[in-house]
Image 1 (cartoon, rainbow, N blue to C red):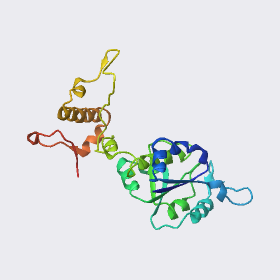
Image 2: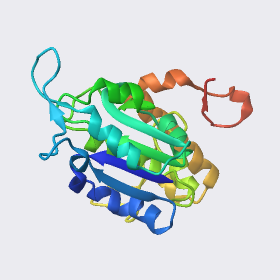
Image 3: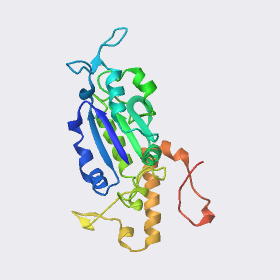
Image 4: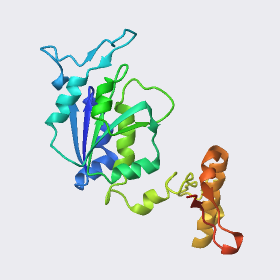
Length: 239
């Protein structure tokens, strides 16, 4: 996968050069390119923003720098342009899976009052929000979305590692423990030390459903359990 990020602040993208994103690049699964929007600014001062038409507070990022920047990218019929914005649809694990299937993603990072609407109308294919709140700029939300996508690329991490993640099966993840078995009187649940894999799997699924019911009961509206006679403690997504 190739990811291009158009930003006023390329220096903040250190997290995409470490940990799992760095592993993805080392393995050749990811090609990451950062583009400083100022390089495509207008005039000798490289202007990238202006006051809003019609008046009002704040500044708006101009359309020309974004168009000029994308014109410099390698032409691709498979390119998908993503704009993180509080006005977008809520970003979910399903969206991360869908984006991971695209060979070329371009992220446009907004700032101030956002970008000229013509950028969104003419260049953007997907608009996502990472929550019902407002950040100072789009760099953080771009990193969140990009990281969620990168970890799903083939060969970056083992599939079984992310298939038990929260939301992958529609509910939250179960609790995790490691050694020591007893820390200051706080013990690992005995079932996890039993070596009985079927009982462990049942316990994990029960705890996952319990955690989801307590913290995110809305997610359970998309889950159904099998009939008791099935003999399996499995949760399924409603279709």
